[in-house]
Length: 171
Image (cartoon, rainbow, N blue to C red; front, side):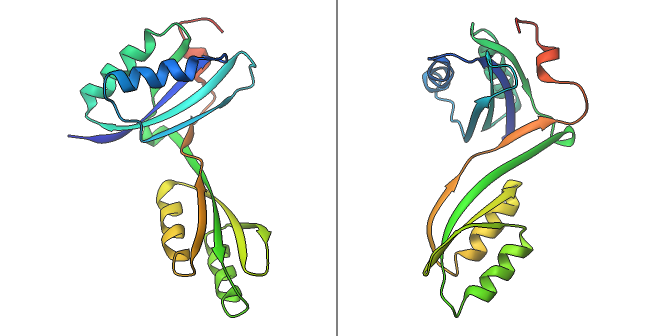
């Protein structure tokens, strides 16, 4: 049975690493639903969060293949019960004097923040879990979405332990 799996990676922070990792997925016809990459507190290491939809045996195969890549420092699957996940979305929404009050109420209910406003549009920043963002996008769609940018999922395990400490490779 297919499920959504979130994979954490620590990788060398150097050119070509993202290409090699995405190439592994492309060569084997695995689809990446979501990809987020950023620097960590260690300038030599970047953290990747990859979301895939597949069955459990395939995600295990993906993890084993990722572990074989030279620039991959650590890989593991996030456990939903012990992970904190968030996404960020910026939504440019149409507005006018007639709809502004109602739109601001919706933004407040979803704990969004207006980061830019013009006479006929505003940009809202909202963070949270995917379902919350989907609900916000659907609701403000009635006002008219001009443009939307979504970062993709990023996540960390709860507690004091960290992925780098569980790594078998260099850091």
